[in-house]
Image (tube, rainbow, N blue to C red; front, top):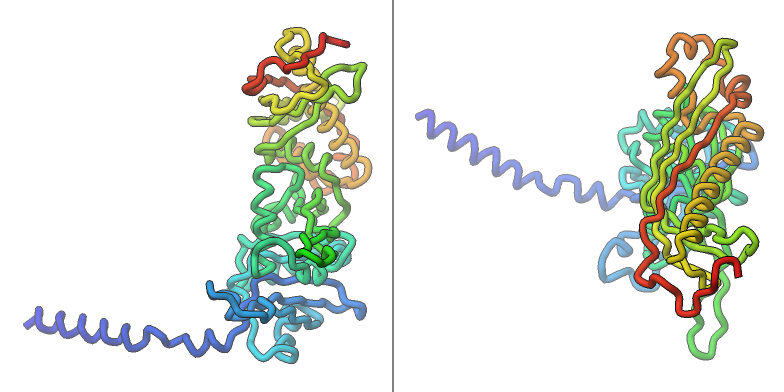
Length: 402
């Protein structure tokens, strides 16, 4: 009898699942699926929200004909939530944000602070904390979302592709919402993320036509924050120095001068491994300093001026110049941020907290503004060049110094 009851229960449950399997089909057909959003400060001081909503046909493999793959819907409000609600005034579907891949914020918007934005994202049941969060430089976030370039149909996928490619080129520092949540309190480390800028690109013309001039996106450098407020930007080179110091540099290339008396005697080195350690110390007078130790390995991938890199003396000189390049780059990055940004994005404060917790508890409230800009530091670099590539000696190798 019990077996019969169990069997009937299973059949009823399974049947109910089949009957309700498409309960949300109608709802999905009534939603506008947003793939990216932009946040700007409007001319009236209110929040301007740009939602990049894909057309259903664009999601299909067969494509959607000549119809644009997405629609940009712009709305405003005194809060992000209000701006989202106002999208229904401009668009025929309710916006759905669970598929958002990138959030772009305008420079003016970011300078006023992202605290409320991060708070909204963490409370939202649709927005994900693993979404990319990027700053637009010299343009609005809405301008970035309006750029159509690359091979992807949907522009959000184009942006995501650029952001993911940063793993093989460490000249930018991209972050997700979760990274901001961890560093935004400013307790010994502050947020950093990537920057999108507009660039001019030319399309390849068809026969008998002129090349089309249009806009593309470039991921350039990084945006530095003090707690939740944007305070400045770093260029590509300085961002590489920052990534080395924070342990986020994976792979990149460097052009190192081989001969001190010849500026064009350059060797391209592929950085394949790099580690950085930071050790704080406090002397008897209470002065704080940091010892930065960097170890790096690299491969020579390109040699100019037909230099004979099999020459041991030249090889050692290149390795020394490799070390000096990293030392000068990282030292300059620390100095520039201390003097111009006054925000600890290196995590020096956290290293100090771990070793000297009592001291940190007394000074943490004035760390970024008063103490960090004046702490002394040393940078020591040890490098190792592993190989010179498949070609050991150039066909027209020149003698050292010639």
